Image (cartoon, rainbow, N blue to C red; front, top):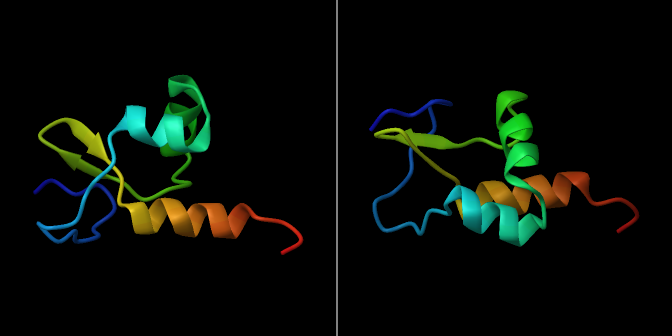
Length: 68
């Protein structure tokens, strides 16, 4: 597995596509691309397909949550 951020993902883990991430965060694909370029959310590059773990997405949301 070609893993951009050297994190290991288990085979049984449900990975999110770019479209699924954009839908969950209500962002555009260009915003996702900028976030990925800045390293804001760890991702996996599997044969040229970008995938995100739900855990990393949830951690990102928690990190960005203010006042809770």
